[in-house]
Image 1 (cartoon, rainbow, N blue to C red):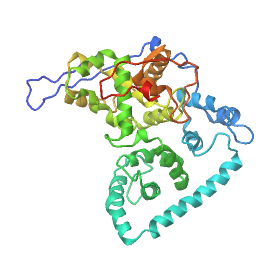
Image 2 (image 1 turned 135 degrees about the horizontal axis):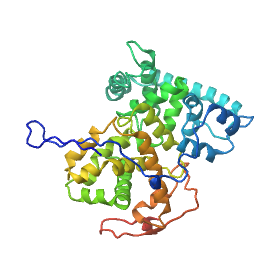
Image 3 (image 1 turned 120 degrees about the vertical axis):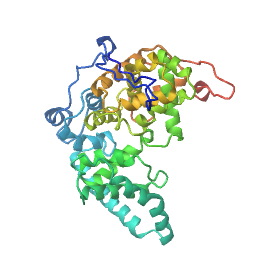
Length: 384
């Protein structure tokens, strides 16, 4: 490990910055099935996972392979709609073709209603609060990707249409900044406008990925992450306790809100997305990815006793320099370690419940222990 430090007495350099070189994860820290499950190839998907009718008979095996090995790039257009719950794994080729046509017509109807059914007053309000924001965001999203590069790129208009239609379709969530960052890779792989829209609807139902820092979803995730740090990276938790406002975990808000897209290259971020979408062993794999980043890269934070603002700078400076494959391996190992605990605190009991299609499938059901609460706090066991 190599540490480079800015001298504190140098002008205009108020913060200490560090570079961590060659982080490592020991073999004992890995999930036992690491390197034993291969990437899903075209031959394996069509020759083994799909039957002659086009059904996926072993849903668990699909998700296990996605979780450990990932997908061949050419399969994303086909497999992502399953992972994002556009299609049931029990659907046949014919079922999916029929449903795609129905959804295409539904999408066209959403577009028609957005364009022609709103009153002039509603249309003006929609433009002020939604459309002008989307139009500013889409021209700044993933322009380095050839799919979105250049002037007058029609794919930018397609992205704008999908986001406008989504805001109209789901006015409760409408549009928040960051949605374009999540939509762009999906559109780039799926390419069809209607199919991408319905995949995006499935993605947005996983509200943990797009919300403001005051929303209940992000608060719940941060509470879980704080407790995971306390349980599994106690040295870093002790460091957080020493500094004002450090428990807000400001340095990781962006990780959760944009699902690591700004922290890793697109290829690695998509690999992390797929692992999260697989819902294999947990619905909260994104938290174990956060935990892995902390476990691997926080030694400098502790050694230099960085303050809250310095922690934010430290982790921001690691963006695009972290080893994403190592973080994935470490996160899978941490998940395995967590699932071996015979007893967990009541504050983490929610991680053992299915919040969607996830699989807490090992038969391991840890006992839950109340850790003690302040008068204004409620124990999860009491709620249960």
